[in-house]
Figure 1: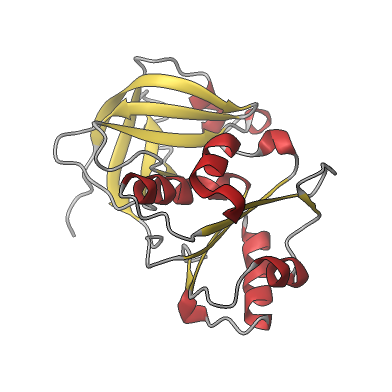
Figure 2: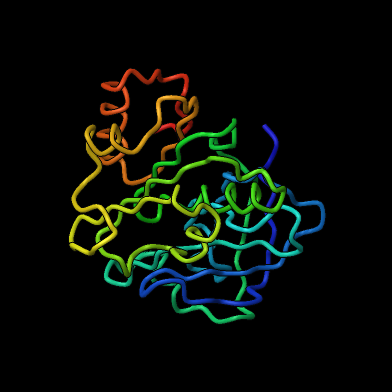
Length: 226
């Protein structure tokens, strides 16, 4: 088996996306490329953390001269994202081979929960860049409005085909509750052929059952293997 490639890259810039989500722009190694939707294993380049690898999705365009990750920081868990949250530009990360089962297959419905939006950010940005956004639709589930990652950009990219549902807040113009079969039925047009799904495992399991209940075949669904 080939040994896994490793690249040490410097953080160029860190941005605040929501109260607990940050974007990390990092150097892009020469010849490094990915398909929108793919991820890599990332660790912090200090001796005690270099073997603590976590998967993060690229949210930049492949054509950009930097890489970007959009990462939810769980400061209460004292884990890797908490360590990432403390880093400053100039700090080093280690990135590795590119992998992932999520890639664009054609116009359809993207269904995301929380930080599960990240593979779709790269895909939707790429489609916009290529002027191929078409009638792609995004259903995005979050706890509160403040948790919505890149809300204004997604609204700009998708217009009325960007639909939010909030579990812990009632706000006019936003659906309220959890994604249900009823919610899917009311929002999805029958002509969609492709479904893209990413979120916490319990949400994904629930949505898979709901899609199946609506007669959508497993072969129409793109997601990471659970």
